[in-house]
Length: 76
Image (cartoon, rainbow, N blue to C red; front, side, top):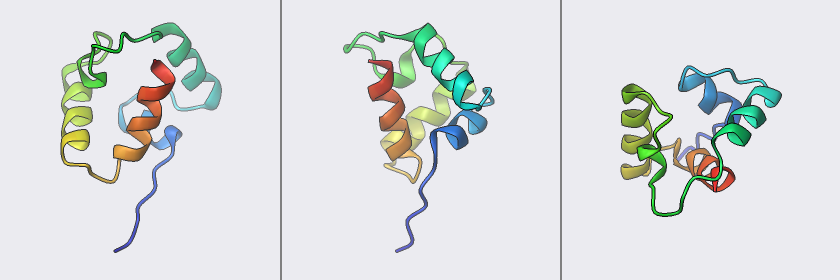
């Protein structure tokens, strides 16, 4: 099985967000702390398409799940 590892930069690009390291850090700083009781995909700052992508990838434990988990941790 071939592992497809995605980076945080790739994830932000996939979500249609600025993906330079400084832009990622600024996004996280602006949206944290996300309360522990709020699932990442239900955070109020996502668009409906971003929310759907995050939810599907997490539920399916797809190849994006690892980097989505990293984002989740950084937002907490």
